[in-house]
Amino acid sequence: MNKKLDIGIDIRMFRSTGIGTYLRGLVGGIHELNGFRARSYGFFGTGIDEDFYPQVPRSVFDASIYSLKEQRLYPELLSRCRVWHAPHYNVPIFKPRGTRLIVTIHDLIHWVFRKQFFSPIQRVYAAWMFRTAVRNADHLITVSHHTQKDIVHYFGADPRKISVIHEAADSRFTASRDEAAVTALRNKYALTKPYFLFVGSLKPHKNVQSIIPLFRALHRENPNQAELVLAGRKDKRYPRGLELLQNLADGEGIRLLTRVADEELKALYQGAAALIHPALYEGFGLTLLEAMGSGTPVIASPRASVPEVTGDAACLVDSSQDHAMMQAIRRILNDPAYRADLVQRGLRRASQFTWRATASQTLDIYERVLTAR
Image (cartoon, rainbow, N blue to C red; front, side):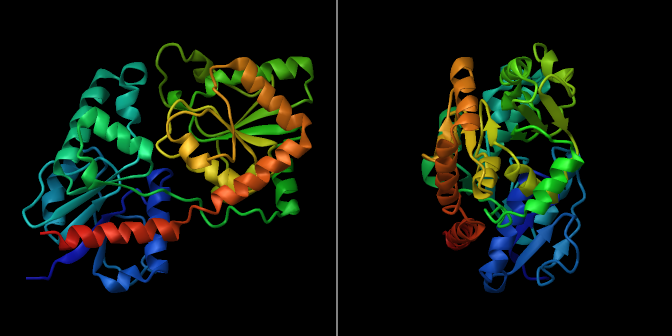
């Protein structure tokens, strides 16, 4: 009988955004710390090339997340590992004896906004899986203290078995500026005006609909004053009341960029007057760190985990207050000293978050769970 691996990591979402960014940063940090030499690891899924971390064996796990197939495959795959790390709450319903489970829960969006933005089936499934994760996990990792509080509040999780481990921006998001790359990007997308940037999918909780009227108003005042650049795709379906997002198109001070390449993102940040982030809820808010690390000031709504991530390095404005938000936009445009101060604060703040630190703290959790009696 083959010896069990110490740690199995579900890497099915390795090439995606969101959870994929977390997996890439975590795995890279473990590699940097030589963690793959200290314990035996296995990657379960697809998406990592064979020459990428070749010292780690991989097993095919080709089931879609949230599927019946993944639940059917889980018991045999988990039985090969002493510890299984699920990077999302699509956890195994049944856990084999002898395998311990670590689950990373990034946010509770599907629960907190269950009535506003999700169908009855989605609500039932989210409640079931969150409760299963809390019940079956030997240890939970969350990416912010706010998410930790939510898990305790909504699902009665034991705070003693939850660790808060922050994420980080990729190391490429630095203040070093390639003017040629910024100019090329501006030319490619015809960004001829000062622009405020939103990065992320245009999902309802991102609250982009709250700032679109502000930029349309700026456009009516002066078409060359500023525009809002939305770098992200629309959701497939919007609930009633969000027709503004459903029908959104270029024009009237709004630019919609749905296919920005990952390698263009730093130049897109650096060309912006500021990142603007009006979200109603964030489990962490990685784009905030990416922008700050790139030397771009941030305007954000002080909801959920956002103040935890930004500290005093961002302009925090309640996105429901149109006048205050417009004042913040105008100040970025017209007060160079204020903008420069935000840039410096943001650079200092972003430097406090590294994937090496994330990996180090996660390795400590692996050891704690592996050696627990």
